Structures are given as structure tokens and as C-alpha cells.
Length: 63
Image (cartoon, rainbow, N blue to C red):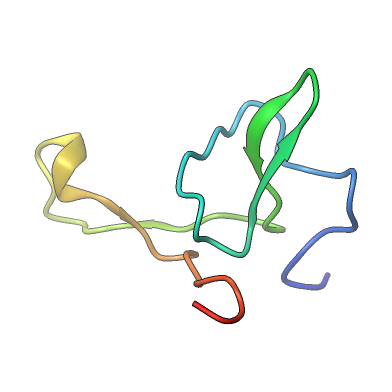
């Protein structure tokens, strides 16, 4: 599977408000969602959500 899905496909239920991520996409009626084929959330020693991070993040081209 490619690392990004075709336009119109997204991870249902996975919201994203990081507007400078290449996988972020906003769709009318669906809000801003993640278009990555999968997401990786990292930091195995995390005790709070603020200690985790999205390892799938990639900046949009030109940023």
C-alpha cells in the first residue's frame, strides 16, 4: 500500500488539525482528517497525551 491514500479516502475517525502536515485534508461535511495509509503514535514511555507524538507527520511540500 502506498504511504498516502487517493483523494477522497481517509482514516475515518482520525481527526487532524495540523494544517502543515502533507496527510491532513479537510473535506466538506467530514472535517479535517488524516489521509495517511496508517499512523504511528510514538513515545513508549509516555504517561500523558502531551508526551506522545505522531511519527507519521511529514511537512507539506514547500514548507
